[in-house]
Amino acid sequence: MTGLTVVQSSMLGNAGFIPTSVPIAAASSFALAIFQRTKHANDNKNANNVHAPNRRRRNPDNNGGRSVLASRNPPKISASGTIEKKNSMIRLYHAWMRLPQIFRFFNAGNLGNLGFYYLEKVIFRVLTQLLVATTSVNDNSFSVVLDGIEKYQDSLSFFSAYVIQIVTTHLLYAVLVYGLDTIDTYEKYSKTLLGQFKVYGVGLFGATFMNSFLIVNGGFDKFAAFWTTTATFAVFNYFLVSWVVKNAIESSKAKLS
Image 1: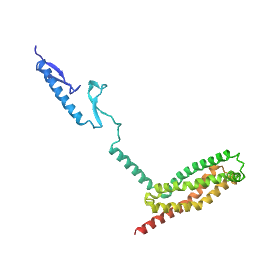
Image 2: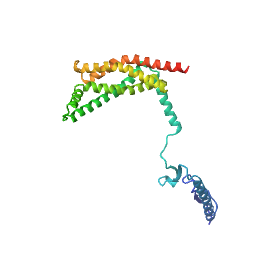
Image 3: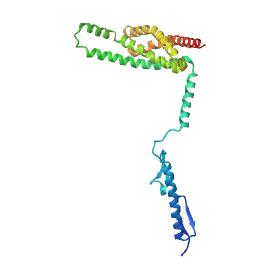
Image 4: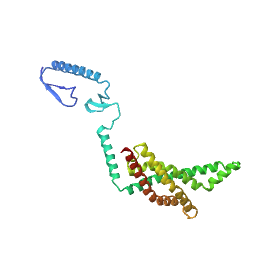
């Protein structure tokens, strides 16, 4: 008996049904031939793409067992997405650099002072541990050193942290205040760093004295004395550091011309 048979296409999955009026045997032979030919073509294609990062495989959880694109590698950010993020950062940096210079200077200086503050606390704690660990030392000459450390511990920790933070603050000023073109050559970097050491060197002894005076004679605690001292000298540093950077750039331009 002949009649209409319905053959589900293995190539289309759940995409639809193909009606045909051919006998069942002919339809089965036709479908088998199509399947074998398609399978052969897919095998050749997989052989040519054996090194491709993405492979097509069967997903048993998918309805109808349709083929889905499966990647052996984790998803990566597209090139366009990376470029867009870089452009956003560049736009943000340019917007920051359009703010008043003195505003940028004090914010960059506060970041440097924040690192300075915690660095001073670390050095102070290290000196304290040193004093505790050497309390049983009987060497008279070494005891004199320990007595000096104990007596001037606040000044020593402040002085040491102040010197170290000059390097980090110099970099912050270049990135956030004056621009990377102020340190884009060795000559500019060395001149601005040396100039900043001179500026901060002048303030170093004054700031150390003021910090110690506020703690010993002014009744300030370490926190209040620290920030009062740094705020006072920040004003002087702004004008002096700006002058140093300006001279370094002009000197570099003069040599090029």
